[in-house]
Image 1 (cartoon, rainbow, N blue to C red):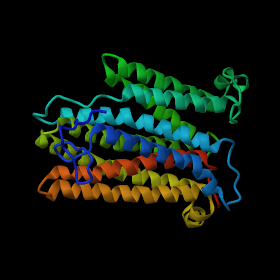
Image 2: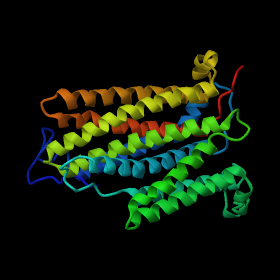
Image 3: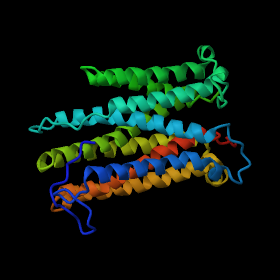
Length: 342
């Protein structure tokens, strides 16, 4: 991780070594990050049993594993998209120092490839969890719509990884866009009422979320690298905050529209309490609301605090909350689609 290293003898009130600006060293922050990732992974693994309890709904086989794989896939999409986005923002700032945080694109592509491969293996066994390699019908993937979309996601992450390692890493945006399109189409099968509208909404929602989540993560990593270049850091964080406000508006609008397409207005409150999908959606809404509050707090600090970079503290909490949103989103896509009461 591209973090500032601790200096000799620096320590906080709790005795933990810290950097000159009061932050914990890279090792402590890496351990904290791993613990948070493990916590987020528990959401799709344990969530199905909690959300399905008392609903009378039956989940698909392996719903917990599928939810985890989808969460990993979403996270792997967010990281490189956000990096490319913030690099473009930084290039627009006059006089900004040229250093950029090291790209995690190749690692994200590897995680995405493994997750997409696992999801493709489920599709290849008739949406059942494969218990042996012999049960996987790879050729059958070409015979179904879901199979072709699964293969597109696998190939998309493979191509993104190669692009990230090439001399022109910005070209990975094209295979990543293909993954986002495939995921949007997969979420809205042909029998659905007006599937193209649903796919368009999901594509915009997923793209804006990836820019927001991955972008904020990369902004914080870049600010940590820049260190004493406070003016440049404030300028970058301020530019990102302005764009993030637009992204939040688009995410909210597409999320509400998508919800009303699956749950008509007069049934939303009932389904939020009585269906697994509704309960998970409610948890996601609460988390997004918490994220919005943290984003507003960070923006107020950026504008009014004596040291604008104190906005990084709520921004770090915002990244953690956004990670939980990604985990809940993975679980949401694996649960039974709500009943459309009419």
